[in-house]
Image (cartoon, rainbow, N blue to C red; front, top):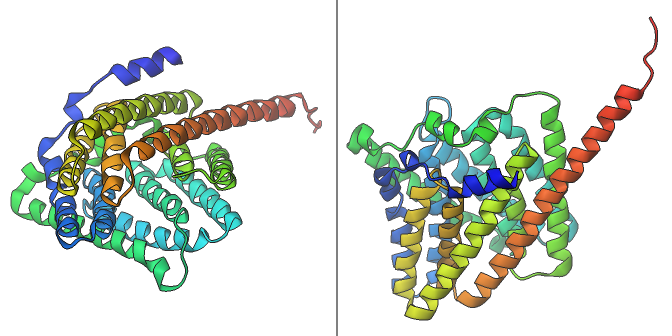
Length: 354
């Protein structure tokens, strides 16, 4: 299993890199970041850009015969999930229950194809993020509304480019994405999907409870890591977890070196955010460890725009990613062992004679 994980980390499939479609996703990030820096509201610009960043990956998906529907569904789902997560975060119990429920839904979509599972994952991620910043009343609508605006902006820009650019502007179709995600595409419907749902829900509930109980800074990265690395099979979860940890450590080291060398101003931070966002779009299906490294640097510089110190963000990212990866692996191993025990018990149970 370790050998497969190291091979996965060191394998690059450059046929899955598409510079043109990746570049199309950048204007929807650049516009709100530039507006936020220019007007003195970088935090608001950051939230809009974050929504646009997530929805940009939807341009690589296809739902049914539609290329736009994944982006639209993700935008709406992320917004609603953010609203619910912001309100649910007011209660520790509610946030744990909501995380488990959203995680179970995500696991159930594994049999529905890569686009459906990707949409469910985005909704889960934004629920987890928003639950870490609880609010009530009109304030509860703020983050989700900014995410909605960013998602719609991304969809309009990309769709317009598709309309006038033709097939040359299109991202890979769902078949290409399915080839890059065999762990999810190969899953077939059956009783096992409910076992998967229970496992993912339980792992997320544990991760949410741990993050809330320990009051860890940026603790939502623990359940978010669980959600991102968990896969239908144990060896797939281990491989994805290893790649995530290695990539996070590499990205943290890279972001540290850049921050120390440049001491970047807000305008430079915005430029670095765009640079690493582009790298994420280029590498997401090429090599997951490299994608995770670029994602870590992107997050560090994006949060720095909102005033978060780079050094503290890097440390929190590393610690919480390690904890989340460990919970995902241990949870999967525990459920695999429990499943084998249930099978053995059923096999030993005497059968009634006709």
